[in-house]
Length: 242
Image (cartoon, rainbow, N blue to C red; front, top):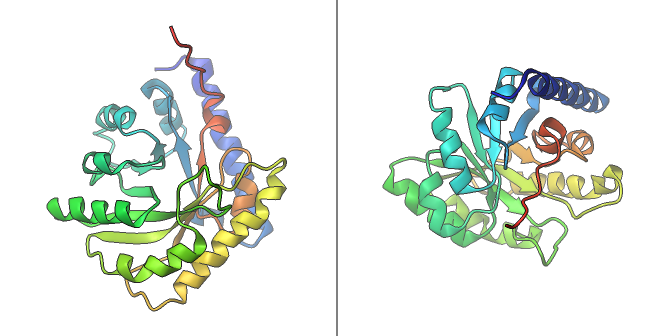
C-alpha cells in the first residue's frame, strides 16, 4: 500500500475533483451523477491505484496493454470496478483486451473496428467501444475526421460484435482550458449528427473528453466521462535511461 500521507493526498484529490465536476455540471443544469470520473492509471503502481479505489474510484483507465494486464489481475476480485482502455490500441494487441475491458475508448480506424469485431466474435461477446475523433485534424494524432466518421457509420452499424456507445476526443494543446471549448463543442455537435443518422445500433450515449487541465470545460460542453490522471496521482515520474 502507499503510505498514509500519500493515500490521504489521493483521497483529497479525488474529493476535490468530484467537487469541481459537480460545480461544472451545475453551471449547465446537468445532473452530476451522469458524469463518470475515470482515474487514468498509466505508470501508477497498484498500491496507489488501491488508494484511489479506497477513496471511491470505481472506473479505471489504462493506456498500455502490457502494463494493464497485471493490474487487471491484481484487482480480479473487485467485480465492482470498471476498466477502460484509453490509449492507442494496435491491432495485433486487440485479442488481449477483448472482454478484459468493459469499454475501449480509442477505436481510431475502420480497420481497428473490424479487428475488434472479429476477435469479439471469436469469444462470442459484444465489445463496447467509443470512436476516437481527431477533432483538431492534427497530423500527429490518429482518429476519424468528422467527415470520415460519418462515411463509415453504415459499415460500423453492421458489425454485430461491436457496440458503439459514443465518441472520444483529445483537443489540440491550448494555452488555457477555455480555449478547448470549441473543440469539445464540436465533438458534441458531431455526436448529435450521428444520432440523426439512420444507423440503428450505433449509440451516442457517451462523450469521453476532458483531462486534468480542462475537464471542467469538457463537462460544461457535455462530457459524460472525464479521464483524470495527474490531478489525482500527481506528475508521473520521468523514466531515465540507464
